[in-house]
Length: 114
Image: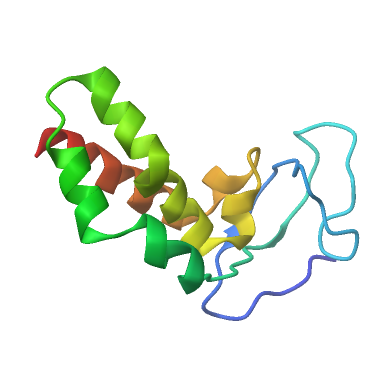
């Protein structure tokens, strides 16, 4: 029987987690086994105050080639978005199961196209 999530949380489907919580997501043998669980969030404003600043975004926007854009982006703005949301975003393997992952990466694409 699957656990129920509060109404504001989405359900994750079959995804193996790197840092599985034994109570919510027991270790499974393959990435394709049934493994439903609630999305976890751990908002961390302290982590975003230094990485998601106006100055850093302007520095990203001032880059004129992809290599320098990526270097400046990865120095704070991109990882800062993941750190700011926390929870599921901290898991390399199942972070993309969180809808916030796609909003964040759409903004990264938007920065490049600006």
